[in-house]
Length: 480
Ligand code: 9MR
Image (cartoon, rainbow, N blue to C red; front, side, top):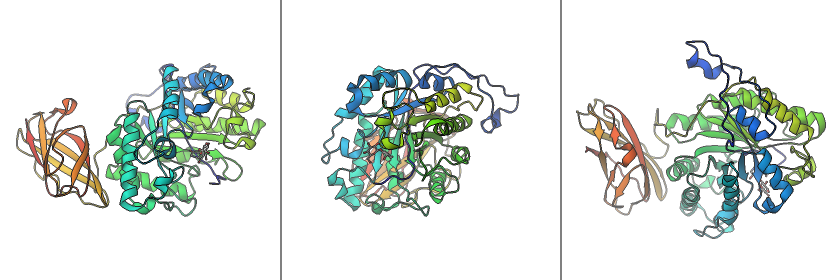
C-alpha cells in the first residue's frame, strides 16, 4: 500500500490532571461558549504530555512492542507522552491470526506499559481493509461479516475498560471521488461500518468510538466531504460514533492545508470529538517546525479536539523514516519541531476542551438502513406505571443488532422487562445493558442495576446482537 498521502492516529491519558482553564465567559453566553474562542492560560510545561494536559488535551505516540526494550526509546516515551497507540499490534492480522484464535501478547505488552506509566491507550484498529489475516482476506459475504462482528466483539471485550478510544473503522473511503473504498468488507454491504460501530459499542460501552482516515484534512477535498456526510448521517440516525480521527500524514503530495482548523471545527460541529491520530510532517528545520506548531494551534482552537498523536518517536522509528517527519532525531534528540510543538502547547490562548463521554444517542430521525423499525413510538404516553419498548434494528445477511428504547409512562419505573419473539432459527448471541433470559423463541430482557429506575416519561436503552433474522413486530414492556 503506497501511502503518498496523509493518515491519522492518536490517543493518550493525562498523567497529570489538567489544570482548570482560566476561562472568562460572560453571564448568558454559556450556551454558545462552544463556538467562541476563549483564552486558556499559558503554561510552562516541560514535556509534551504535561503541556498538553495543561490545555486539557493529551499528547500521544504510536508505539511498537518490540522497541520497549530500547532504553532510549522508552526513556523518551515515558518522559514525553501520555497516550499510546499500538502501531501494528492490535490490527486484525496480529490479534486473530487464525479464525477465532486470538493472540494479544504484543498488544497486552503495550497496554501494560501504558498503564504502569500513567498513559492511556488508543485502540487501532478493529475493522480495516488492510492488514487482515489471510483467512479473512479469503472470506466474503455473510461469513466475512460474521467474522468481522466476532473479531470486534472479542477484541473490544478483551480490552474493555482499558481503551480511551477505538479506531473502529479505518480508511474506508476512496482516495478520490468521495465514495467508499472498494474492499472485501465494503462488498459485504454498505452498512458494514455502522454494524462495526454498534458491535464495538456493545462490547465496550466506555470507549470512545472513532472513524479514522487519511487525506481528510483539506475541507475542499471530496474524500473529506464523503466522510463528513457519513458522520452526519450516523449522528442523525443514532449510530454510535463519538469521534473522528485525522491521520494527518503531511508531505508535499498531501500538504498541511490552510483550512485544517475549519475541517476539524466542521466535524466537531456535527457533535463528535476530533483527534489527530497519526501525525507526521515530512521535512526539516524551521519549515517543518512551523507546520507542527500550526497543527497544535489548530487542535487547541477546536474545543472538541481531544489531543494529538504522532506516528512514532524518533525519525528512525517512522514508517517514512527518509522523510524525517517526527519530533526527535535518530539519536533521540529534540528537533526544532519538538520545540515548536511544546511552545504552541504552552502558549495556550485557545479554546478549552469540552467534556464528552461516549453516549448512546437515540436516533433522532429515521432508523438504520436495511430494516425499518419494527415498532413505532406510541403516539400517546402509556398509562401510569406502564412502559413501552421500541426496537431499532440493523439487519445484514445472517445477523443483526437491535437497540431497544424503554420509555416509562406517567409513573417512574423501578424495574422493567421487555419480551421479544425471535423468528425460528434466529438466536441472541449477546446483550448489553440488560440481562437476557433465553436465546431463541421468546426472549426476555430484564433491567440491570444501573438502569432499573427510569423517571416518569423518561427512557433508557439496551441492545442485543444475534444471528439470523431480527425480531419483527412490537416488543412488550412490563413494569416491575
Ligand atoms: O506504521 C505502520 C507500519 O509499521 C505498517 O507496516 C503499516 C502497514 O499497513 O501500517 C502503518 O501504520 C498505518 C496505520 O495503521 C494506518 N494509517 C497509515 C499508517 C501508515 O501506513
